[in-house]
Amino acid sequence: MIGNRGKGWRVDATVRLRFALALLGALGACAARGAPTGSTVENRAVAAPPELTPVVTRPALDPDCPLAWDELADAAPPTIALTPPPPDDVFPDECPLEFAPDAAACPDCVTGRMAGDRAALLVDGPAGSGRFYNVGLVIAGPRPRFACLMASTVAWRHLVEVADRLAPLPWLDDLDGDGDAELVTWHRLPWGGSEFENALVPVVYVRVADQLVRRDDRGRALAARVADAYRALATRGTPGPEPACQRAITAALDGWGR
Image (cartoon, rainbow, N blue to C red):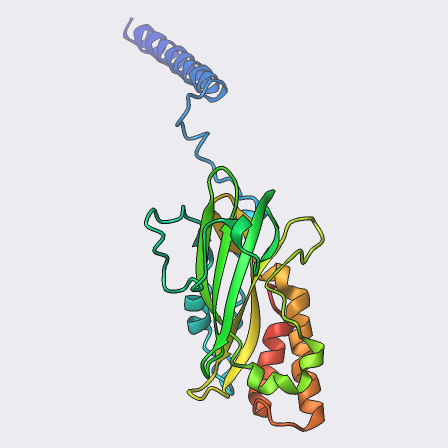
């Protein structure tokens, strides 16, 4: 009797275990098919659309020419907010003096369309020995938005000798032929403390809703033109960056946005 009870208990336990496992499997399948909002199924990583992802050039540091990439990153951040005009019309210091939030009232603006809306860009400069520019962008529409920033073409001190390869510099242009304009901001990339120790680089922004997103990949053709200008400068024997920095600058521009 004891042996029979022991054998029967083992059979009953096995049956119960199999039943429990089957029930858990069925419940799991139902939960996966009808997962409510906020479940772990919904929290899977989803890649952001390409236009939402900044593309920022940051090569490895060259020990022979310490290009100041951090300084460029501060001047040209990955994203710039497009905000409503201030109610008192007191704009940030980065804005041009004659800047106004009404894109239609800007006869000196460069115009285009960004993400389907009319855009107007006012560029004031160059000023001072650093050839600084105040740049103001207005996005027209039912909800006008604006952004202002600083730019610099101090590196033109070298490139003026090959200006025919670059001038005039574009600031708002449809670079990829898709019907939407990109904002082009020109910046200095220093490697020393002198104003002569600066390279010229293009930083391109696209409009995505209420922000500008930095996309260096959209500026590859411009960067290639600047690289060619630096090479032409070297062949002419005119004063320019020292050889180590000449190589570092052209290498960075050749790999722009990659």
